[in-house]
Image 1 (cartoon, one colour):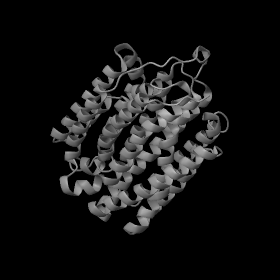
Image 2 (cartoon, one colour):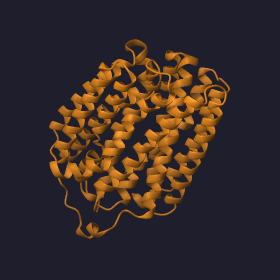
Image 3 (cartoon, one colour):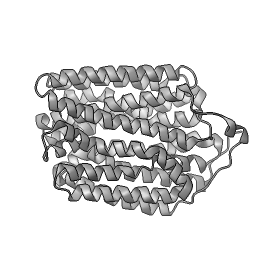
Length: 394
């Protein structure tokens, strides 16, 4: 019999979702424009890529340690520490006036890695048979942060500038600390037979590697799009493109994901991989052939749809197939692979920007992303052929 969530459990999950929303909104505000902002300080493509990658690299470094440290000092205490570093790093980025202070500030902000303890808190706050529901509720905050941050960032930047996003991020971090003070940390008792299961199987690493490669390809796209689209379309039209494409993609992604959860047939990771593959092609062809802003908005929709579906379902899928033993370690490894991919993708695109300026850059970048994205899709499809099907995870 499937248990029902009580009022306190819903409240805890909603507050954790709000913490994720506040923190990630600050992060997603910066991502669509960090390359453009960094180019004011330097024309070195690698340093521009590093400005985007530094946050992701430090996040990757801290994912596994965060699981162990949160066990030692308590998850809430670790989240306080992580949010404090997030606030400090964003204040330094806001106050900095050169590329190195920007990189350093973002690196410090990334050291406040709290994804793993928040995920574990959400799972431990509910009965074992409701952990997918827990992940779905906390995932709402992530989804809204992605759509709001990415979609509104350039439009807001036309009025306040990119630099002020770092200050806004720090303020949002303070708000997240206030929310955390209201949450009562609980530990749910699990069935002892699950405690003897092993979880770090070869299929887990297929998923982790697929996440790494997909994240690399995605951040190559995020950097190349802003470097080319902002000068070509202007900041306001670029903002309209992102806002409308992310909004439409989000609606499509939520609709598809809900349908998948109901009928329990489709390999959703495979589906998102196909959409991302199509999206990569349309995004780069749109840049190469200089589409107008309406056509380019349409070209972005497949990529953002596939990426949104992936973000919606990946954590619930993992939560549904991983045992309770060493769950902190499992999520830590996953997030470490994912954030490492973000950083490597940004640095790789920055290197291409440095060494291949001119007509060669976009075709080479396009080819590289297609190769990486194809391999990522193959990893996901192979891993999803058995344990990771949606009907097995729910």
